[in-house]
Structure formats: structure tokens, C-alpha cells
Amino acid sequence: EVQLLESGGGLVQPGGSLRLSCAASGLAFNTYAMSWVRQTPGKGLEWVSAISANGGGTYYADSVKGRFTISRDNSKNTLYLQMNNLRAEDTAVYCCAKDRHSGSWNKWFDPWGRGTLVTVSS
Amino acid sequence: DIQMTQSPSSVSASVGDRVTITCRASQDIGNYLAWYQQRPGKAPKLLIYAASSLQSGVPSRFSGSGSGTDFTLTINSLQPEDFATYFCQQANSFPLTFGPGTKVDIK
Image (tube, rainbow over all chains, first blue to last red; front, side, top):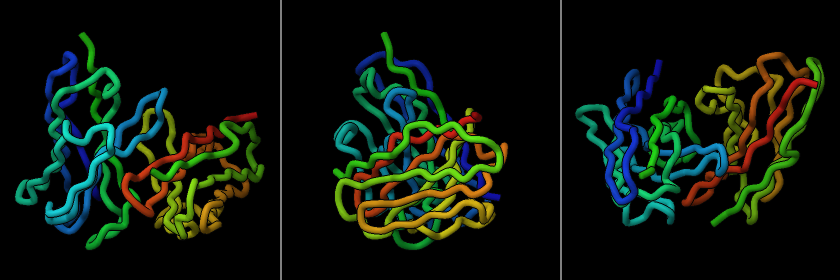
């Protein structure tokens, strides 16, 4: 069974930084593209960033471009999201999600992790 | 960016009812559409991908249709475990975008 477990969330002041991790198990991690998606009660689901299976391709939402960096360590089966210059509007539950199919991008997600809460507040 | 809308935003239904949810894209996305179910406190679960392909393990009472800009998720014979929120998502191009969700609750 594929499992995705996020960690690294917490309370941070505006302008601060956090690094989220997503530990994957039960899959050939290095064959799947991965994404981060965040969720808030007010804004619903918002895709944040994606990375190809080998890490060579990355994409970002305009709202986080230049502030967030997605990366992966395939030797550790782990996905990361480095978040810098955090803003109040970045407050959300951040979930990692695996592309359904291995190989090239398919951009629909199965499964998702349960998420880690990031709160940006002074 | 491709905008996704859903209707209705909520629907009240009874066990055994048929429920239809509509999703519309702001531009042609072919069949690059997915549907997810989210129960309270749980992660979203993939139901349908490529507009009409049923994800493995998902009951056959769920079906998807449509292409281009207009899509439909149908739940036949609603079951107690189906009361949840349903989201559509376009997978045609980055940035990926989701619909605002449709909450299916008990009448």
C-alpha cells in the first residue's frame, strides 16, 4: 500500500521559512511525478507545485513562484517543499500527492497524504 | 490560468438517490479532468480520471462523462458513505486548478 506522510508544518511569523517533507513508502518513488497541494476552508484546494520523477522538471503556482522550492531525494523516497518569505495567505494544510501513473506527467493524484498544517501569523 | 466552476455548490439527497454534479472549464481541456471525493478530516480520494475512467477500487455507481469544457459526475444509488464533498480538477496544463467543490449531504 502506498503511503505518504507529511511533516514539518507549524506556526511561523510572516517573512519566515519552513521546510516540509513527504516520506513515501510502498512505491517505486523514483518513477512518479509528485505535487504539493494546499487546502484552506476559504480557498478550497490550490495546487502549489509539481516535480517530475527524476527531479529535472518543476512547476509552480504564480502565488508561490520565487518563494517556494520543490525538490526530491529519490534515494530517501522523500519529497520536499522549501517555503521562504511566508505570508498570512500561505496558511493552509499542505498535502503531498503522487501522480496516478508512473513515467510521464499525468497530473491527476492518487493517493494524497493527510497533510501538515502551516500557520503564518505574528 | 484555466478556471474551474462546479454546480451546484451543495445538494441534499437521500440514500438511493441519483446525484449529478457538473464541472465547467474556462477553456477546452479535452478529457484532462479528474474527480475527487473528500470526506471530513480525510485526504481527497481519486474517483475518476481522464473524464470517464473509473479509478481502481471505486464502486461502479460512480461515473464520469464529458469533454472539452463541460463534465459531469454521476452517483447512482447514493450510499451513506458517499456523503462528502466532490471536487473536479483540470490536468490539461499547469497551473493545475480545482473546482470549488460540491457538498453532498443528507436530506
